[in-house]
Image 1 (cartoon, rainbow over the protein chains, first blue to last red):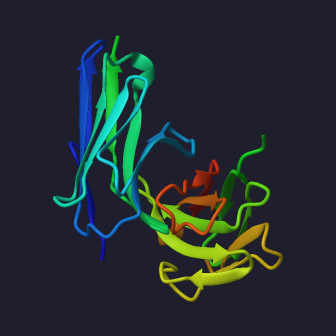
Image 2 (cartoon, rainbow over the protein chains, first blue to last red; image 1 turned 180 degrees about the horizontal axis):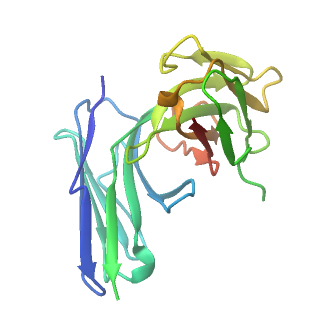
Length: 109
Length: 117
């Protein structure tokens, strides 16, 4: 069974600092890896999708890397802002998604 | 355009009651998924439909849980004789294709928060 782990579970940083969120998974037979954002009481918003053949994906201040052979992904958020405060979830796909428990981020103004 | 919608957004049930949760996927999306998210946890897969066919129900926690998608569009998740451990947010997601391509993205609804007293 696929196991997805996210470290740290929570993170608090001052505004402007860069964020580094880690995700590891046990089975490398995946189609892709996605990073999602979840705000309290809301659904999931897809941030980045990295195909299994790709090494990284970028969108604005967000950059995600994927090392499938070692079962790791890292999400970088540059120059954090208070609006980045949310829970970030990574998920690996084999048609269905297997999620980590998330990293809850607080960016202090 | 319209996204995935779910209703009701909130449901309170007494232990032993039956509940029905509805999901309206994005029009034309072939694949539909249900996930259960307990407080402080990531979502856990429940079941998967490809059009009207339920191809995977391995995540349903017990035979009290039943899902259907009779016309390949709207789906209903039914929970019979609810228990306190069923309290969670139930998320629905849809995908345009079969979910087997590396580019496939699942689009999530806002979820239904079920509280069983």
